[in-house]
Image (tube, rainbow, N blue to C red; front, side):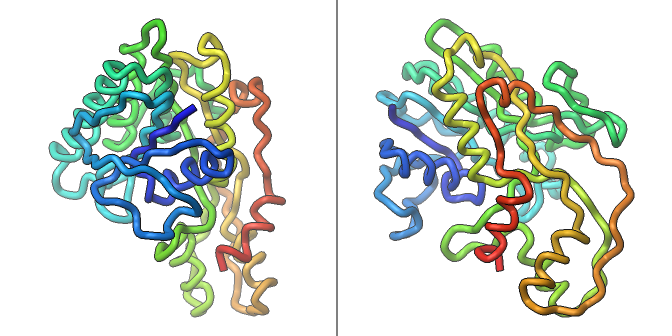
Length: 289
């Protein structure tokens, strides 16, 4: 099986590439410029790509679409002062890619979506894949509309799937910073930390889920959204782990009492998916430090 990944040098896309490489699978990365030498642990092919292009994908069995244009460091609010350009780049660009994939005979397309498609449900709601999207941000709206466009292309031999993932954590690629790097630095300085908690998922678990989805019978996954989430993590607990590891005695932020909507992951579990939970977070912490 051959894999192509857009946005492959981003924090999230990199996990799909590395999982495939570890499995001995040929991988093509679709990015504007070739990845720096040594960025991935093994060789990858490069296909020049920017959102809006219709790349040549003949011979690719599966495409994972992660590329997303946004203000650096922001997804929600990532449109900055150009919502029309944000919509055009990400929605129109994604649709062009989906159409190119189907025309090239790509058998399966996985689209990296987000829990933000559920945005307007009250905090504390259990979110299932059967619930209608109710985005309350432009980011969530773009992802939901791209899902619809992808599912509308479903046909015999073309199985589209949406990965509705929660926040992804994990070690960064060479020269990159992980998602909590600024938080860790602020805590080390003794800065006050705003309480917060949210759902998290290790990038390796995301890639493992994608592997199961890619190899499942098309009838089990085609035209479906699949929720992917693991732990409910409070900054108090995360920073307590960091403080214990580094011998820090700075005050911890209070635990948050804000209700959080958790995503039900029944469809992924039915495929045999079992994420690593808090144990995986603990074993990952040294790499994040």
